[in-house]
Every structure is written in C-alpha cells, then in structure tokens.
Image 1 (cartoon, rainbow, N blue to C red):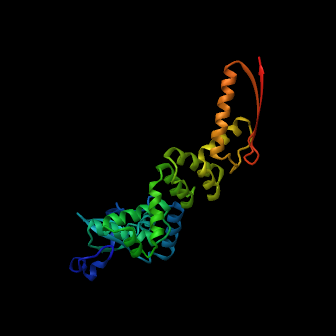
Image 2: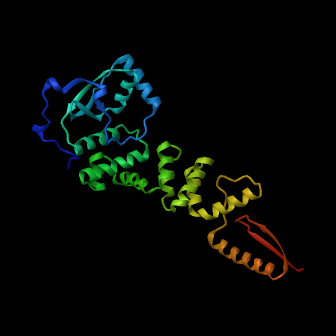
Image 3: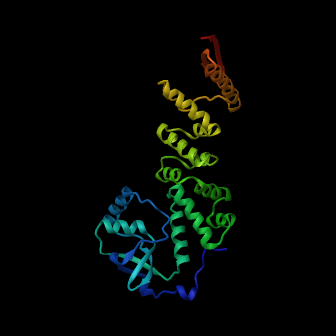
Length: 280
C-alpha cells in the first residue's frame, strides 16, 4: 500500500513548466509543514551555501490559484533564499490535492532525520490519519520497525509542557517515555527536575518509581539547608506508610500533653526513629 498515489494524467506537466523561476513573493509556506521550529543557524548556513554555489535542488510547489503557490518541499531553501533577498527561486510545479501535498511534505521532512521527537511523532500521526494507515502499515512504508513508530507516537501522550522540553532538546525521547506513567502534575514536576539538575535517564526512572518520596525528601533537604542530591535514595513506599502511622501517634501524644522528643535517621538502608516521652 503506497502512502499516496497520483492520477497519472492529472500529474502530467509540460516539460517547459517543470522547472520555473517563481517569484518568492508569490510563494507561501506549506500549511501542512510538520517542522514547527527552524534553526536560524541552519538557515544562515544554508544561505551561505546558496550564495556561494547557488540552488542545487529546486523547491517543489503547487499552484493555489490567482498566480499564487504553496511550498510542498524545500521550505528551508525558501527561507534561506528569502534571507538573501532573492526575488525568484527555481521551482518544480506539481499538481496535487491537499492530502497528497500534506503526505509529501511529511515524508520529505521525515527522511531528513533531523526533526525533533515531537514533530516526528506528529508527522507519523498525521500520515496515519491522512492515508488511513495502521502503525504496522506506516512502519512498513517508512522502513521503520513497528516498535520505533509506536514509541514515537507515545510521546504525544505527554503534557504540552513536557512536549515543549522535548521539542527544544532539553530532554530526550527516553526521558519522555520514562515520564509517561505519571500524572500531568508529576510529569511537569519531574521534567523540571531533569532540566534543572541535568538528570540522566536512569536518575529519571528512579524518581518515577517513587515520585512522591523524591519530592518529600527534596523538600526536607531544602528546609534543612542540605544540598539536594541528584538521585537520592528514598525510603520504600511500604515503609513510609508505617512511618507516617508512627508520626500520627507522636502527634496524638503531643496533643494530649505529653512532651515528645523525636530523633530520626532517614537513611533508607538503616532507618531509625527514636522517641522519648516525658510528662510536661
């Protein structure tokens, strides 16, 4: 099954119209462009190459009517030419409908292999919807494993905040997948920790196992003026339940008028709590 097909007669273009110098002012970016972020450094580098060597590969566009055109492939080249002040750019004019134009734009960007993880995931999602493909069918068409495509698509289940970290490169796709079991609130909290403390994936996975324990320990360390460890050992969750029960009993004793002195060693490998009771 092809991702999209063309009507042969509809796609025939006279040779004298296949490559044309089209005015940049008449060209607009592709509304189906999967890439949401364009690196200014990359555009400037491409512009430098265009200035020295010219455009080696024409952009691909389609007619919109009234002498206007829309980019199908080559938006980076278009932006670089704009930055150089070019009036026209060599273009191949194709006859395509919306679905065909969207599919080609998505595929062209995916094949460049430098999309950020969220743009790549969204591109796969859009291709599946446009062409009514399953994950297995899409993976086969793109020459990827089904697990690769599935892992990319899972990233779209993350919160917008975490997705923005992924898109900017502040966290990796592996970080993102580690956060998937968490609630929206906890995804954001842990993502901030990853960025602020430069946590690796292993550290992240340890925090995710007991996220509440991590932030309880972090808050305690901050209150005591202690440096917060990157990946502190945490008291197991079942033990913390028992400890909280003991602390509730201590509070009841204090409320009843008993003077209570408590010393607590929070080492998870050798946890100790010492209680001294005295009447006031």
